[in-house]
Length: 455
Image (tube, rainbow, N blue to C red; front, top):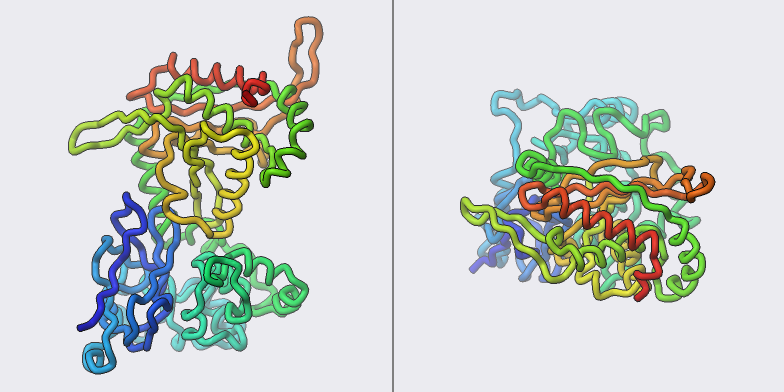
């Protein structure tokens, strides 16, 4: 009897998954443990492995299809069972209009220019974009010499992030030794290859015309291509934040924080914290202060969720602190669970580890689940202050700008001080102005007297 391949449930709250791409096609022989496809949940990318040996058959959904969890998306059959049942993908997220002539080629402007410059026949290419549209990466793949066989690559254990980086930089995954569990290739392994002398030599050879613009308005490497539907993580971000902005009446509170004492204390403690495996950044101090302030003002450490037709407010006993991390294709918020129990050194090590793993695609669903309060820090950019949209079902988020030198009155004269502006966004349905202001005052007091955070 054929073994079903289902859309897996990677997290408790997951309801559906979007197929990024199939690494095996209908009719291919597969072995138990081989990667069949890559799936994007509302938070991260994951791989789906074969649970049996046999022939992949009856593939029911193609790339970009969004499928409810536990839905059968294909079958793995024994050679005898698969004989008459092998068929191509039956459903995709979108499909080309039936009225389109069979000779019509759907390709982005960048792909058309690259094909003309390199002599590639677009009619011979299979598009990986929405509705089978040929995009830039398809032409790049066609002109890249000696690409490894798809079967060899699909049998490798590699994270989706590692596969994407390898495709983008022309790295042969079969030549890499994985540093992850059971030899799984991580994104950092690809990065090391790219940064090695041998990797730079390979990548120095242009794989498409050198006059091709690196950033094209219709196919930007950051954010969705113009004229194409939002997909995957970007679609989830658009949906959830639109709902948050429309449903939650946001109110904002801004405060300026004198960093003089934090700067002095950081200079004393930096070496000891680094010995513990982390970096004593301003984000660490803010996270420590937020956790302490939430312990005294727990009303902001909560969720507001719909239960049927009723809104239910749930206050949490532990602080699960989300730290927003920007990625090329969106934003992820890894969570420091029970942040209030961590001292400064442990907190620094945890945040350093989470950010590193998030940027290299090495996180699991539990790492980005369960947040009760979030911090969004743009201090690395020349942004003095900004407001952030609340990450539902949370009821508050703290936006951190760039610390800047400002004149501060000390009672006698103005002194130059490094000052940080933070803006608290709260859901006014459950958080009143006085409650938010009291929390922000506590946060300011802790950060301006940071020795209290060491107790």
